[in-house]
Amino acid sequence: MAECRFCGNKAGWFKEVHEECQKRHDQALRDARELAGQAALDPDMRAKFKGMILSIAKDGFLSASEQAQAVVGGLADAVRLTLEDKILSKDEEDRLALFLMESGFEKQIRESPVAEQIAMAGALREVMEGKIPQRVKLPEDHALPFILQADEALVWAFPDVTYLTEKTRRSYVGGTSGASVRVARGLYWRVGAFKGRPIETSSIEAVDTGNLYITSEALYFKGDREMFRAPFRQLIGYEAYDDGIGVWKSNANAKQKLFSVGKGKGWFVYNLVRNLAELEAQPAQGGRVKGFGGASD
Image (cartoon, one colour):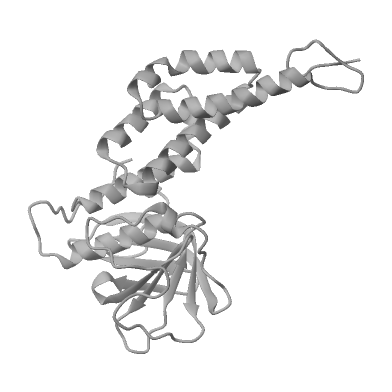
């Protein structure tokens, strides 16, 4: 007779788990995820989090890996709900950082996609405030393949980007096509607006794969075959996708250039490029910071 893999008692013939133990386990997973989502932004809940998660885990037979999975999922839920309607505030980012450090699951969180999403949201907020983010730190063995202008600073870098172009040119007149809208500096297009609209492959063709660099003044692409700079001042149109962005340069016969940066990251690259372009178009002001070199993480 087999033993229940949760409680260790006899489970009965041809059974590996008690039905009641399975229910307790499944409920504990849900409770742990919900708890993490609440504690991520609530200081009072954060102070109680460690004790509460241990209690839930013990009662629901959660392994260490299952606890980590639930915590990362709960944190992702909290971030997603926040970004659905607005950009992440500095206070919210600070609370998330404290939760990360005090949760007991810092390593698992840092290795998850939600850590990058929080950094992306923070970078967007800084650009919308008229500042140039200093969040990107390239590895020592990754030299920037471009020479930046005197007052130009690296803002973000995407690896493994697919660069594509339209097979036939589409006209661009007085606005953007598809799902794109004009975004004045400081305005944010919410995450939900990008869902379900990936870059289509029927009317475009892949040209190259490489790295996309976004600076305070331009887009740079470096692939195996292609290498170019697209200054914001030369871009006249933008198109938003769930997994990337499309842009048009000002020359009359230009085809749309598309960059697929990864599923679910279109909200970030679109908002970042649009706000940086608007920032670049503005005259220098007291709240604008240009020319920051280096990076911090």
